[in-house]
Image 1 (spheres, rainbow, N blue to C red):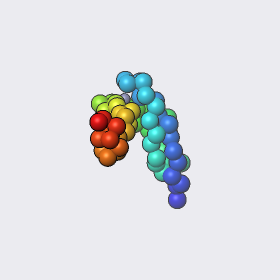
Image 2: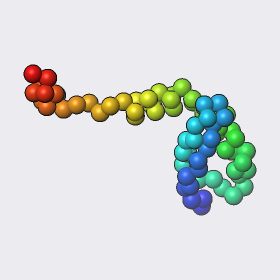
Image 3: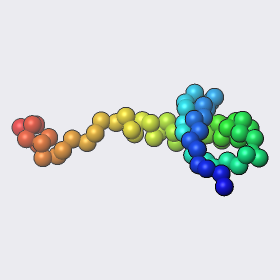
Image 4: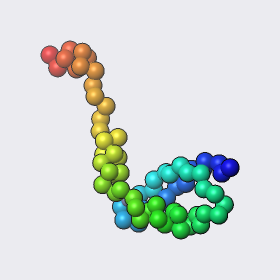
Length: 69
Ligand SMILES: [Zn+2]
């Protein structure tokens, strides 16, 4: 049984590190696997997700209405 490990993969296209969890067997060529993961990175989805994560948290609507008036 292979154990699940966390791999930090650098995408050369968008230049972001992204984590991938995988259980690789020792027969797997890890370097080749990482390269393949980097090449198949969905850069747009990743940057969209990052942008979403950076968005300011929605303000509590009750507090916001009090503050606004
Ligand atoms: Zn990418």
